[in-house]
Length: 471
Image 1 (tube, rainbow, N blue to C red):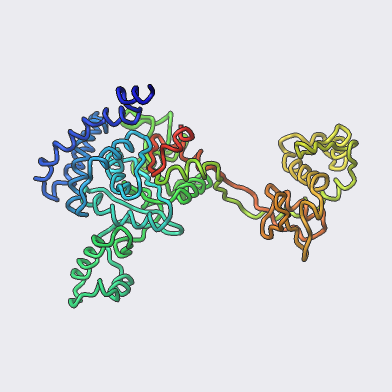
Image 2: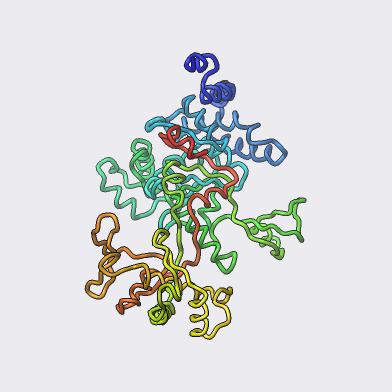
């Protein structure tokens, strides 16, 4: 009976595809018209789209034309034409949904449609890749399309940033790639070498990075590009570093400020760059712009690694002394008098007598006030180390180091350390050298980071199996 109902009404997926089919038909109907355009007209069309958006049209209004233009640019630059299934994928991504596309169905090419359309707003688009290699590869490979359309493309990788620039050709890469048998040219003229590099990129762009097309730039310049490729780690850490910056000049991601005192074009939100250009004072809050992101392998990032924290920390030089002091203090405490242990919950709590004792020792009125929060942290960790963690059961001491014992396998785990200062508290308890603790300065999980985007889309080959978790 259920199968019969599906045949009549179709699944949710089938109904959705049927709903957007008219958009696909509209894009296809424009193909012959856009084939007549010259390459020089592509950037002009992009400027026309931007002007129409400023005049009140929405991205949905210009979607068929924008997608048709991207398809034509891809045909001219890559020799690849977006199939209908890739147009559907692009529409899904534009609508802030997750597109399930198997390996080989062209996710990378499909993403260019939604990335281009949303970049027309002028607020930037982030395309999140799995690793630095893919970020650079896709910038070079798909950057050809965006460049032909008059948009800038960049990539953020570890310790570096690059802008796609076909006119840039470094001497280093000329030398390295001229040694490649596929790259040699009998003519030493630079233009011929660039043509050879361009040909090699077209033939092997899906798996070979031709570095000569990436011009090094600052991270700030990379984020100001219309479309920025990078990994989730790079985007996340740059956000954390921006929140620790002392001035706007030190920030790298796009920002805007919300000022109730100044208005520009009847809007309370204006870009910091425009304010500085017009010598206006900046008052109000500075906010990072989270416009639109496309996340590749979205199930890996938003589910598997969702709660993985990104942490920026610094060494805490004062901590070792405090751990030693509190270790000596709690060694005087007695169970059931100064503290109680809950074996089931694996926790330890101070009694009233214990609280009074620690406050007398430290000569403070109340250890639970905000100014004493750090002392309370050291007390709690020292008490845990003293009462809950036992030598030769939870850990061993070998060669002057505390080594954790895996509670499930009983194996030693050298190099692993308890978090939140517990390991330092155990080191102080055992009388070995207390290693410096790292103090967390900024932290965020991937899930919380990506929730800040106004619109978020994703691609994966296994979306349906994780549909409930995505929801």
